[in-house]
Every structure is written in C-alpha cells, then in structure tokens.
Length: 241
Image 1 (cartoon, helix red, strand yellow):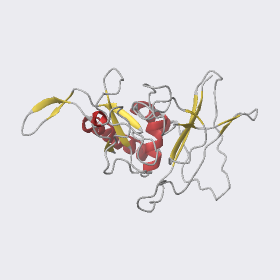
Image 2 (image 1 turned 90 degrees about the vertical axis):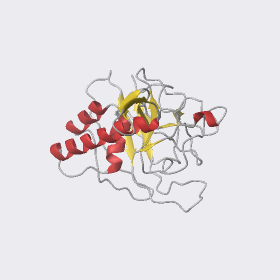
Image 3 (image 1 turned 60 degrees about the vertical axis):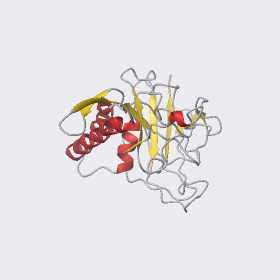
Image 4 (image 1 turned 30 degrees about the horizontal axis):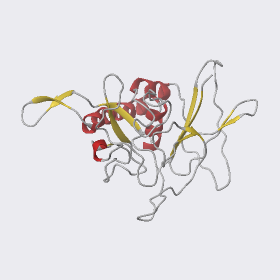
C-alpha cells in the first residue's frame, strides 16, 4: 500500500499528479484521500499515471484524522498518508481472516482484488482517476472471503481462456467480477508497462457479453465506459439491473 500523494494542486486541472516513487507501480495498491462524507479531498493526487493506468485504485478516509504526532502528542492531520494506514491495517485483518477461514497466506493480488471489487462507489459513477474503484469497505471484503466468492491460482495460456461460473441469486442483484494479477516488470522507460494482458468478459446465461470498465487517459474527467483494457493489470466488469 502506498499513499498517492497530495499534489493535485500542482497541475491546473489536478490530473496526472500521482507521486512518482513507488506509487505508480503496477503491483502495489495506491490509496487516495477521501472525507468522512465520501468526497475526494481536493489535495489528493489523481491519475492517470504516465502510461495511462488507473491510480489510485482505492480511497479511504484521510481527512481530519486524529492521530499520533511527533513526540508524545496528538493532532488532527490530513493527507493520503493518513488514509493509507487504514487500508494497511484492514489488509492485515483480512490476511488474518483468510488464514483462519481458508488457510495460509493470501496472495497480494487477491487482497487487492477483494478490496477494490467490494469498494463503495462514489465520486464519478464507476471507475475513475480520483477515487479508483471507490472507498474501502473492509467488512464487505471480509464477507467475500467468508463466502468463498473468489478464485485463485488460475492460469491461462496465450490466446486461451478460463471460465469461472458465478452464481447469482436474484436478477435484482448487481454483479461485480474482477481479475487482478501480479505482472512482470517492464523494460525501464517503456511507454506501456503491461506485460501479461489478461481480459475479463462477463457472459450471461443467454450469451450476452459485457466488457470491463475503462477510462480514457486523454480525457481523464470523462465517465468510464465498457471497452478493452490493455493498460492495467486489474479489471472490473459489472452488471446492474
């Protein structure tokens, strides 16, 4: 987990301001700063990163957080560095729950998928470059683990596919599916950093097919739309009645 940074005011429109250390890395979970009212703090850094990928992927409350400060003191602080410890602590609890309910240590890409796919959608509808997939909901991620709503250790060959059946109990339910994987490092200074390009498609029993949500890096304020994602190593497709 890495704090996205507090640099949205560095650019006139706030976009492309995610810090340039570990924050843009493909395989980390980058965190934005939201308020208690589920609004993105105006200082929270926004994507896209240089090759158009989505960062941050998730947000958590980092505004006016009462916390330890310097030596033997407390203070109300604001920033993505206040939001990220909440996500880190939640991940630790989810790891412990996984070990208790399933057994063993969960893969980092599984934890990333669990919290992103169960996040509370706010800001722009669906995926966006400010809040990512939404606000952290640890209890929902825990329910996904407890209910065994995940699959791990799948592999797929080039030009091949893997089918996973998803039970849906009611046609009034929203269905969300996500794929996430640990991607290999790209060559330094590559314009596109994705190495293994896996695509997710949601197919209904009647044969209707739904593509994942994608953003346009050239128009970062636009709403997400269904399309083919050739940039990110995390993809979500959802269907709302």
